[in-house]
Every structure is written in C-alpha cells, then in structure tokens.
Image: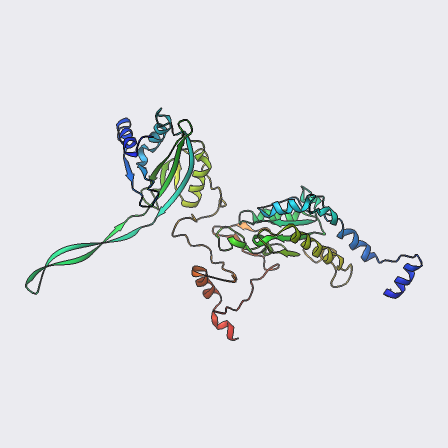
Length: 204
Length: 212
C-alpha cells in the first residue's frame, strides 16, 4: 500500500497497518533485559533503569532474573575468560527472539584489560552482538541510545524473505558452542562462525 | 611498639631453633621486615599473635613475590704476573643466585593499635621446593589470599584448609604472576601500541602488508 493512499485513508478515520509493523511494534516496545551485571558498567545500567533516566519509557523496565524470561542480554562489564562460558550458556538459555548489547569498552574489546592474560577480548567472539557501546563506563544516555538503536533495528526486521529476522529462519542457529577451559586459554579462542580476527594494516 | 631488633631477639629466645633475619629496605619508607625460616614459620606466627605485648591479631594483607634466578657481577682485585711484573688487575666474577618465591604478611594489632610488622617466608627454589606453612590457622583472613598466592605464584601452603585456584580456572596450567610466565599468543589490533605491545603488533601485522 502506498503512503498517499494510507494517509488519505487515515484522514477518513481508517487506520491501516501491516502484520509486520504490528509484530515489530509489539516486540520493540516490550524488550525484557536479563538482570545480570559483570562489573562497573552494571552500576550505570542500574542507574539507567532508575527514575532519573527511566528505561521504562522504552518498555524495558522489567529486568528478568532468569534467562528463560528475558530477550535482551546487556553484557555490562569485563568478561573474564573464567566467566565467558557462563555468559554464553546464559545466552543459549534465552528463548528467541533474543538480542545482545555489549556495553562498555571491556565487553566490546577487553578495554583497559585487553592485554591481560585473563580477560576475553570482547564477547562478540562467542555470541552475535547487535549493538556495541563504547565508553568506560558508558553514561546512561549511551545505553539509552543503544537501546533506541536496537529498537530501530527490530523495527526494520522482515518477517519473510532472505533478510528475515534470525529467529524466523529455521536454518539460523539459536545456540552457540560454549567454550571449554583449556590448559592455557579458552578452547576455542573464538567462534569462527560469529567472529573473525580483523585484518589490519600497521602504519609504523 | 618495640623495635624489630627487640622482636627478633625475643622470637629467638622464645622459640628454639627459629631463624629470624631483618631485611633492610632502601626505599624512603624504610619499612624493614622480618624474614622467618619456613620450618618454624607457623610457631613464630602464633607467638606474634598471642604474645601480650605485641598481640598482632590482624592480618591486613598477604602477597607473593617472585625472585627469578639472577647473575650478580662482582669486581675482585686479583694479583697476576703480567709481562714479568706483578700487577693488581680488576677481574669480574659472576655469581649465580638461585631464584625463590616469597610470601609477605602485613600484621597489625587491633588491641594495641600498632603495626605494621611485615614478615616474610621464602621457598627453597621456584620449581620443586615450593612448600611453605599456611598461616590460615593463625589468621583466618589469610585463607583466600593464600589461595590467590597459590594460584598466581604457585606457592603450596601446607595446612591450608581448602587450597584451590581462586582467580584462574582449575585446569589452567600456569602461574601468571611469575616473571617467566609466557601468555598465550592472542594479540589483536591496538590503536596505539607501545613497548612490548608494539613488538607484538610488529610480529602479528608485518609492515609489508601495507604495500598490497
């Protein structure tokens, strides 16, 4: 239906929509985050959900203490190599449709601890991340911005066709392998289906 | 509080066979410490806690130090006959000092409001003789910190109630705070690499790649 006819109809008091819009509207406005924090970023996440910043405006005030009731994982803080398998396991236990926001420098890249022996260099090595937020820690506004970005992303998802949302594609994986503890490092060090090392040209 | 010399003298009088040495500290704080032989370490610790004038009943910190093997060069004057004449010549002698691991305890007294008294114990070497007595039965607060020293330095505390790794996972094979620990080769892009990280960047991202 073209936009002109649609606005003409709405002037006559007839509201038209598509199933896709209705479906995305419903999902976008009731995202339930998992109540789960790893480090100082979690404090900013808590501040975001409180009265001053009020994440409830976006329909995401219900932080669920169980992965089975949540559909957004906010990875808020440093992911140590010891903690990484548990984070992946929590993600696997969440039902589809599910989304991930990697919050803060540590969760996206290892941050200030990147060269440390015990810190994972970003959670996107094991699970697909929808929105990355830089910052150490990011302010609540940054988390709200990430949240709005996620909402726009949900809004643009298709129900059918090749570009349809992941949870509507029976071929797409819903669970990702949990890394094992090895003698020196996690095994594997990253999941090649989700992430590949960047190719980078050094200047000096 | 009495001086370290007095404490050392009293320990040696009270506990037969105890070896105590005062370690100097050249830094501005001049905080000297007592090096205690591992054999009598447990009895000395219990005495320090219970002795009425000291009552070091609060353990604030436990940490480990790794002292790798090192070569010390000494200049020695040697008399030698050079071209028919006897001359004094400086000769450099190399001494090899064996490495060891060290554990440091910082003690205070809540009762007398004094401290700190720093005590240290040393292992025989860095490979086989890494056992030291656990002081957890004396100060309960040592439990988790001794586990941390065990995890990161590999000092085995005999008599510890629950000696497991605490920061790294159980199947991890190394002791990361040792000076000779080699971390896994997992360098990734860093926007402003320096020093050791720059060396890794050069190794992982050779410059030749730019011309392509």
